[in-house]
Every structure is written in C-alpha cells, then in structure tokens.
Image (cartoon, rainbow over all chains, first blue to last red; front, side, top):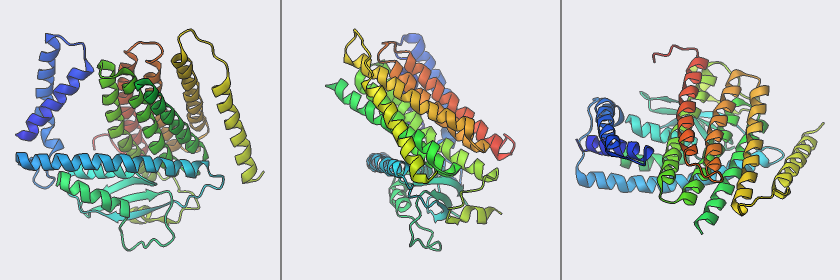
Length: 173
Length: 108
Length: 120
C-alpha cells in the first residue's frame, strides 16, 4: 500500500511539472491519470519475481532503503565521471589501448528492478556494457573494452559489479 | 554566478558529446562503438541539461530540464543494452582483436 | 599510410575546426552569453556530422542503429541549448518529446534487428 501511495505521488508530481503553468483542470486530470497508471503498473515495478505479489515494507525500513539509495546515487555519479575520462583517454590515444572481450559474471540479485538498476549502472561505469541477463542462473554477460591480462575466466566475478551489487541488495532486496 | 557555473557545465557536456562521437568514428567494431558513445553522449547531454537548469533556476523550464535529465539517464542504458543484444543475435562478428567471447560460446 | 600518420591528419583537422569555432569573430548586441551559445551550437553541429558520417558509412545495420540512437540523444542537447539564447522555454518540451520518441523507436529497431516477433 505504501508503494502504491508513493507511486501515485510520483506520477502526480511528474504530470504537474510537465504542464507547469497549471489551473484546476490540470490538477484533476493529473489525479485521474496517475490513479489509472498506478492501478495498471504497480505490480510490474515492485514485484518480487517469484511470487508476483508486491512486498510489504514498514516506514523505518523504507527510510533505510532511501538512505542507501542516496548513497548509491553518489557512488554512481562518481563512477560515471571516472568512466567518461577513461573512455576519452582511450579514444584520443593514437594507438587505441583497447583489448575487448565479453565475459560471464555471477550475480546474487533476484528482483527485476534490482537487476535493471544493476545492468544500467554497469553500462554507465568504466569500460563495461551489459549484453544479456540470464535470470534463472543468475548470470550477467558483460562486454569489456579493456580486459585485464591476469583475468581468470573461471572466477566469474568483477570488482565493479560486486561493488554495486552490495549496495543494491540493501536497496531493493 | 549561477550563469557562470551553468556555462562551465555546458562546456564539459559539449566536450564529452564530441569525444563520444569521435569514439563512434574511431573504434573498430559495433560493441566498442556502442560502449564508448553510450557513456560519453549520455553524460554530455546530462551536463548540458544540468547547465540549463542552473541558467533557469527553480522555474518551470528548470524542472523540465531535470525531468529530461532523469529520463535520459534511465533510458539510454536500456536502449544500449537492447542494441548490443540484438547485434549479437543478428550475427555481427566481433573485431579480430577480441580476446574472449563467452557469450557466443554460450549461445551457439 | 600508417596508423600514426592518419591519427596526425585527423588530429590536425579536428584542432583546426575547434580553433575556427572558438576564435571566429561573431558579433552580437546581446552580450557574451549569446555569442558563446552560438559557438556551442556549431560545436554540436560538428558532433552530429560525425554521427551522420557513421550512418552513411557503417558496414552493418547495427552500426547505423547505434549512430541513430546517439543522434537522437544529441538532438535533446540541441533543444536544451537552443532554449537559452532565444528565450523560448517550449524548446525543452520538444526535447522531452524527442527523447521519448527516440527511445521507443530504438527499442522497435532493436527488436527488428533481432529478427523476432514484437509480442515478447
């Protein structure tokens, strides 16, 4: 129920900001549309994966998740800026020091939204892109622009993925 | 003061936009091009939109710029992911300097 | 022609273009912001032409799809910059609509390249 109310307020604010010089008609329209969208989309966004039912969360738990999410945003922005300088260096350099390859990485996340955030943050961080996710086996296929020389293919782990996974588990699981 | 900081953000965004497009030209195969340009162009456009927000302040246009930034940050990785997967499945060969190709081993 | 030579020629061309864009005299009555933003506009034009070159040249269809995706995100930047010197705030609305449209178009294109049906 808390998730539904939260989503309703979110869609309502988005609609209000998109049509900013507002009058009464706009507010009524925003309420109607966001009620409808909430009714349609809620189970898609916060479902658990196995059961298909939305999760019950208390207020204290919600605040803790929000704090971890803010920490995730800070880490994400820093990694994103680092990634851009890395790619810029590789593009400008005359010899193009790239050594591409695609590898398998194990993950422990189960929920849909957690996996989506993990894949998106892998795509925007240093030298990696997600290609595909195998949800049953818990494997992410990652394409790297510079594979390290001493990488061991049987270990199936990557430092940057583990860093994000540790935070995202606290937020979404 | 806000306008000067906004100008700095716009300049950073323009530089990264240009470098992303240069990567689109220089890198050897479609996966590396996708990797470089998805990162650089997304951060560059986000920088430009944040600069616009600093120019306009807390007005309607500023909030719309922030919404647009959030939207691009959420959708650009998803479309990059979809394009990478579809180009693997449609059979584009990786560059010959590729050292490991475990996704292909898994699928065929 | 060696790799280094080609890199050097490309570097000279890019630096020349950047110098032209930065130092070419543009006069304006509206103060320094308008002049600066006009130069920013030329800079984005250069990036968009690089994308168009990849659309024209790309050996396979996914290359062209990637270039079109990047062009779509660049145009949002165009709309954002255009709304500052002209003072017309509705350009950012065009940018938001363009971002939505481009995302849906790229997803449809990816599904088409994958060679599957649309009902997944």
